[in-house]
Image (cartoon, rainbow, N blue to C red; front, side):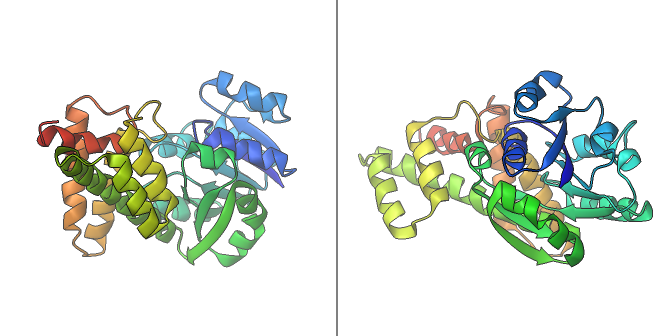
Length: 291
């Protein structure tokens, strides 16, 4: 397929590279042009603006940090909305609010453009190695047209509903579950360290019980305190807890644990951890335990 790709950060660069390797014709845009040079050496074209990255493309994928970044790239001057042709599809991989997903679907629809929310689960190394879990929502016809793109970036795709915002709700609830695990690891490790038990011993037991790569990966990061470089910055984890609570409010579904997690991430930001990996929220439990 002829695709545009906007956002070449830690996640986006690996996804764009895998699209190229799968034989898709890719034109990329990043605000910092230098990040696109490596992909250009692998066959990508570099666009000078978001709208140029969309021109004559069947689809454009955006991988951006938050709602304001998406709004600027899509609705700003020389943005996606103005450059994408009628019938073209905007695939938003960004973790955004359900409210913005609804707005994107409506405004693209008014222009005769398609819109899909397709967030992913996985860290940068998973993006690089085509091991992401892809969550898609939107019109079934559009999803099937774009399935070759999903297959190029991930190991498994789940279709969760006909409304794009439903995928964003799944992503936010999934990140809430992962954040809950980070917090419980922090509390358990702090307790066991004071009890004289090595964190890695406990982690080995938990891996035998759960057999989850999320437990294995993040448990190891927390046990080793490998919080730099950040695979996913703590400030973005705080953003996701806030958005999860907004979604819960829209659905009239209380999430008391998410409220606690939002405050834990906020405390970590106040202590200077905003740019560390979000698993560093576990430090709060260690500090509270006098460690």
